[in-house]
Image (cartoon, rainbow, N blue to C red; front, side, top):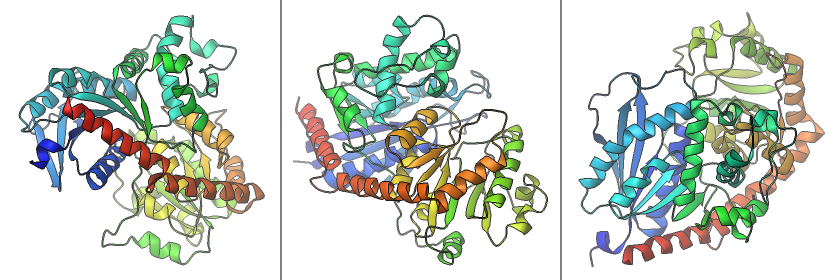
Length: 471
């Protein structure tokens, strides 16, 4: 029998942003390598200018049993470019649906299963049109997902604004969420991004199954709450598959960054890696305080610096002169023996995996948090937006592998920053966190190997895909 007919053809849909695309691409690798499935990846991208070929799906890459298509949409006339992320991505994903429908209708054979990421719930209608089984891939923690599943219930039960609640928000069977850690869309119930978020959360309740980028030992109580006969189980009737940690791993690219050559010369676990992610920005004043904090700490560092938010976000920096424009006078010359400032981008997985790195100052995105755990590196959590405050609470209070920066005023002061840096790199607290994170690192690696919990969960998922193919 032809393999294209005997194996499921799985379509994966990724919303805009490298943080969503990376786990989707890692999922496709495992479906292809371990199960021999034919996998098509649809990556939604957007710009403020009209795309070269609007309303079409463009093939960008073809690999063994894997196709990658770019679904390019222009939302410049539909949403303010300064609108909150959840509002923009909601509009973007809806605008991509005609292109996705056109692409799938022209495929032979057509996909038998559609897996969408956390913002792709509107694509369920296309799965129904083409008689495809439908799954959602939650690219954040099970705890955040449990919160999202319970949001429609909260919307009915809570009166007034969530920020006015006097007690933490309770999730049945899970840790509660402090009001100050609520995800951004929950801060204003009258905003468009709240309606987009609520719409997305309601969509999670109609899938055939839920994939989560976590593993049993990391979030056992939360996963248990989904499986027991409690409120969460009543709300979400679909099976849940913890298949993580799926992160980009260090590979043999054939080239080696000069940053790694510099790291080779530094003592073991002595360097702090500083990065706020692909879309994270802070103010010009905060960049100044962070620079002074790093200098005061007298600890080694690699700092991935992007322009301040006043400059419009994480645009490219062209050279070191541009970097200097955002830093205190003389900072680069005073710290040239301590650390490096890198414009815009650095090979994060290679840096975190280097023996010289002893800490990670991070915005707290789930991908970055998992990468740090799998590298055995404790974190300084500096949440900026989205669900990052919940991630920070989990990493610090439940997993105990990080400390948290809390911004109580316009900026976090340099002395506070220096204190956290020294604590993680050379303090007793840092050593304890390093021991704990090494245990989680081993746990995550065990979950992915044969007979591991996530490996078995992925096998169960694959059998589910194949069973639905027969019917």
